[in-house]
Picture 1 (cartoon, rainbow, N blue to C red):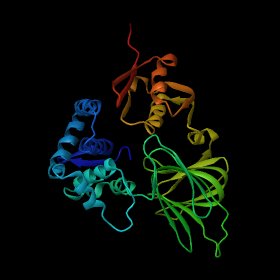
Picture 2 (picture 1 turned 30 degrees about the vertical axis):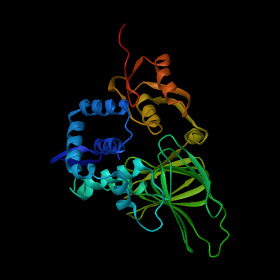
Picture 3 (picture 1 turned 90 degrees about the horizontal axis):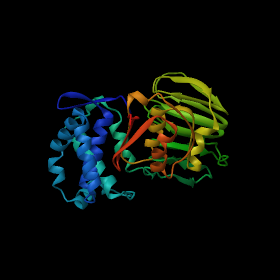
Picture 4 (picture 1 turned 60 degrees about the vertical axis):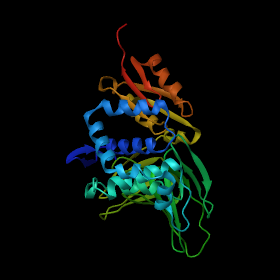
Length: 335
């Protein structure tokens, strides 16, 4: 979603910043905000004029919402047959988005992503930030959900469909025993990935869907357009809604998250921190002056604070912990 544009107070603003404002509103509405979170919120507002503008906008349009009792609001939004349980903070986050989108048209027709954010809170299966989950689907297919992921399961008499609302999944498909044969499909914003007896991952990334095949083959079918791409074992590829992207070789390292690890081989520091941010709450920034530095190693996802604090041991950087929820990596200062 990075790079998408929405509007606040009549001016364009990056969608990431709009999402951060909604997250902060949900945090403050939760009733369990810590002093550190309040400090981080104030520092986030002061970090850039767009942050303050996004906050002022969402604060103004959700003013009435903040007066509602949280439990009553949750019931009003989520009261429907067969509703799945949702955390209090998740429901408040959804309300924050509902107030921003539904009442003001802030996003309007310019963002196709906001509905996905709302649907993630109500998905059949989901994981929080830093959480991973493994389970077996009704047909015996094994499913691994990475951090911050959400899926819906839509099995019918004609197909086995997994809707990836956000994040990343690794799938080991089971042999189909029902007749007639039901294809196994993963659907994202950009199209569908059809499994051909396989083990593979699907990640809904910024503006595209990325697929990597460990075993078997997967066919990519963009939502719009006639093209398709067949990926075989050891290959990765992707698609936008309009077209497929070129296939390339992939390393098994990309699936290390299933073992709770991040493997980096001369990875640019900005990309490394972006990957870490998928598993950690708060803001994780990188100055342009050090963004291109390369890092290699095996890093445990269960102790990201230790990983961050170890960076100055191998790179000429300083790690500034402005708060527990806001970390900035900068060029090392002369001492």
